[in-house]
Image 1 (tube, one colour):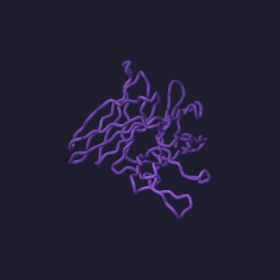
Image 2 (cartoon, rainbow, N blue to C red):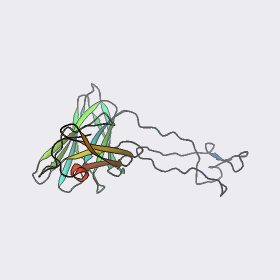
Image 3 (cartoon, rainbow, N blue to C red):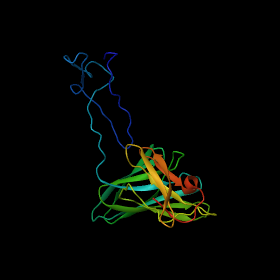
Image 4 (cartoon, rainbow, N blue to C red):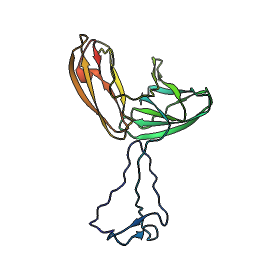
Length: 231
């Protein structure tokens, strides 16, 4: 290839998967636009192709927050709502959008399973469940030091606008929003505080990386507040 010819270089895109390969007769290049040579026959270490990036097919559901903390343990329970067997893949992502790994499972008709989530990336994150049929589920987050257990429902719809009907950061109270971005591009989330009287008082923009997540501490964004809502 000529040194002055600029070519597009493939790089990873969050949420997509590519294993583009070529054999003899499938990938060609030209230095003049007239004569073309077979990359593979020429012994080139490259192959040239046109590709379309597509999302995986199937039902997608989300757990917007999975902690990474030596003092907590997270389990995921999934239930097959269908009258036939369902296959599912659970993908684990960090807050920064790195795919940590995945787990394949099979659920019998009306069947259920539970397993421990393995967050090995030294970072909190979220999970995506891709299934061949409708599933429901819940993440169970347990304090290993005999503390409380909380649960987060599996979400099967996405939204561009959400409302937290009550927040409080006064005294010992803590309010945190768990948000994930299951898209191949970063997104800016604008968090707006509204007083109990219905007046929007202040806003804070937060950028979430592609395929990433964020845990938004309301006190860090707006200071000490008592009552009101967040959108």
